[in-house]
Amino acid sequence: LGAARQAAAELRRIAEAAGFTRGAVYSNFADKADLFVAVLDRRLDRRYAEVADAMLAARDPDAFVGALRSPAWKARGREDAMRQWLMLRDEFRLFALRNPSAAERLARHDRRLRDYYVEAITHLLGRLGVELPMNPRLAAAMVLAVDESLLRQHWIDPEDVSETAVADAIEFLLDAAVA
Image 1 (cartoon, rainbow, N blue to C red):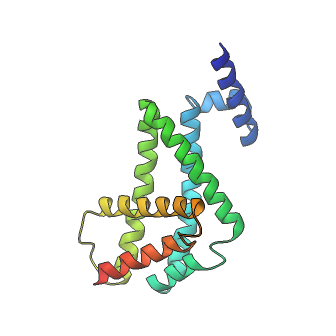
Image 2 (tube, rainbow, N blue to C red):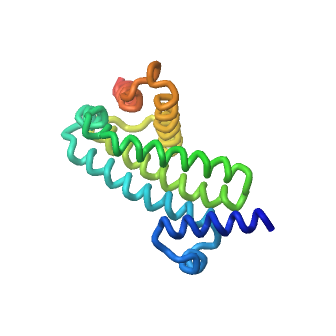
């Protein structure tokens, strides 16, 4: 009974933070995992729009990488938000590893995320006149792994992993694709 009461209290707090009643949450989402994936998807759509805008504004891939290194991209509020979202995704990932139904929902979200990476990779390499020499979904999974891992490493050990590590890695990968 104690665990059920705690889960209800947590859902109540989630509903309040989202500006909904508990009834509204229960009528729209099967459970907390369903709600969490919906929140992740919404955040993913906003992030996708930010990155797509930056790619379209850049005259070439070098300019896009430069934008990723810029102070405007690394603005304190954005970095704090990225850190919070990465921690939440990691928490949910651990939950999903223990709960098969949550894993299925997270897998659908992650596929959407990799779809966006495939789009970005294809766009950037197309601008360089290079055809991707491997399965685009594998390339997307690799870039996603580099992106998230380097962010974690930077936030844990900023003295050894620079704040531009993700941009540096993307630049290296683009240079390697051209070579």
